[in-house]
Length: 81
Length: 197
Image 1: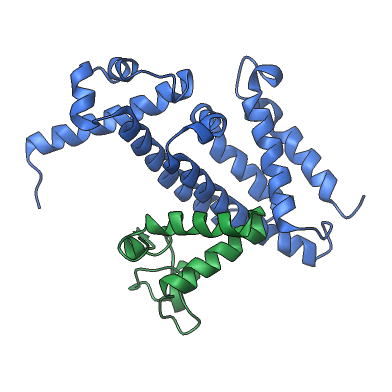
Image 2: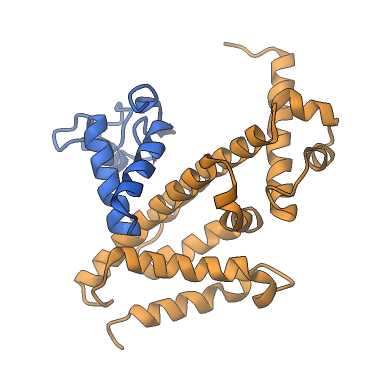
């Protein structure tokens, strides 16, 4: 089983992959509509908005939380420092 | 690359320590547990713990990280098998039930633990809220539940669950509070948000 290198989500079946392409190392939620992988800034923005919408955090705290979460993922260990 | 017997034994001891620490933390508290308690539970010498984890903080971080990965997988699996919001809530409680003692300690102690504890909790709640949100949105669109803020819907649910977990001694002193009160909490929550009211 693969784990998304960008967000850590387990990828068990084709619908977890962008455009159903199981050769990809990132999940459907970390892909752009054309199937390419979102940049760190795009993912950081999306995760921040998601945390605010679903958990109601303060905007600055949500951004810091999103950064901390992403910084532990293989794709972003070096870029998020 | 093939691992040497020595490396295999080392990895096994590490796994044994992580698993023992997980249990001891759940029983005694994460900050209150001593390295000697964990060594005893794992059946290794006190010194062996420090060979694998230089400080208690490193061990705590490793156990929490391990737990976060497991909960992530469990949350993902639960979504795959859940259709309605009620199903998602039920699966959420079942996921907690599997690690109830440790999860409860994590909820109680998060703010006094290393930052990884807070980050792991936020990460777990983000995954859970994602699936609750998806099911809730479908039921709001269908008029089954009242329209409301997704954040408040999630926070009301998690607040209720955490209140019962952290006060287990009041609600279910002899056994799992999820086992005793879980169905009641789901029924109450669904009743509160139902459009039929």
